[in-house]
Image (cartoon, rainbow, N blue to C red):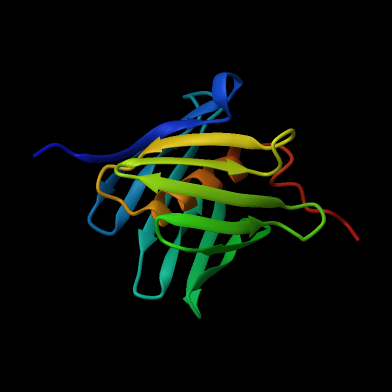
Length: 152
């Protein structure tokens, strides 16, 4: 039996690779390279998804058809299954999330067309929302602007 993978690229040519293994309800892998990458460890539970990226916690719960929670210091809201939309961060300084699954491929965009990052993943058997969550977690881990808390 071949192992089930989510793999692809975030941010185009100057971006980074994302590669995770799916084992039942556990998703584990890495975003970025050996030196500058971060480990991703997620578990799908009855209520949502929890885990870590690098040393930061990831916790989202399903509420009223939306996944809501936090990736590290940032708020996250995602809705949809194969067409996923949502938001990471605070309203003015955050990133829109848009992704569309076609078969086993997921294509999406984090943030604006100019300052954002496109992503493309092969999902294996995972649904689009799982791939989108992995992309958001990888973006948070590796995009310097994403993990900075805005002081008010």
